[in-house]
Length: 101
Image 1 (tube, rainbow, N blue to C red):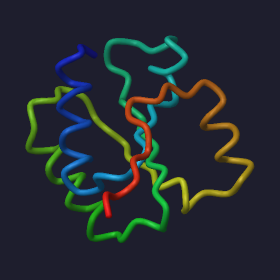
Image 2: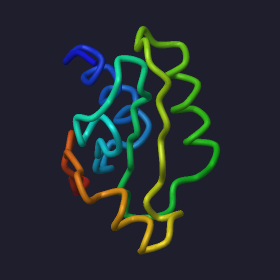
Image 3: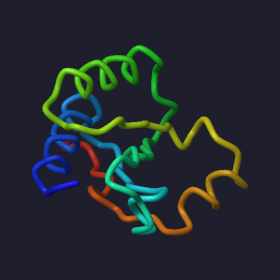
Image 4: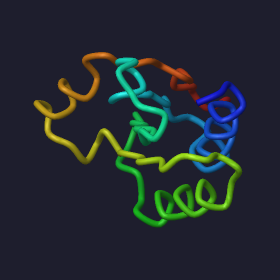
């Protein structure tokens, strides 16, 4: 994965969820991936993410130039045990931002 792919994914996700924290996890975060490994991304949002928004993100990623399969997970939808396992080797791509008032 190159920096351009990372930036493209951050841009796509942020266009739908500007405040969400974007986290790389899995093989690529642990750096034990193969060239064919998918990209695993966790989203840490204040509230549970609507399925429609996740579908829109997935569709935009599919239509992008990112040449990898990308799995996007809402951390609000996983158990605490799974969350701990997922985030053991996390790499934060984008910190959660707060809305301007």
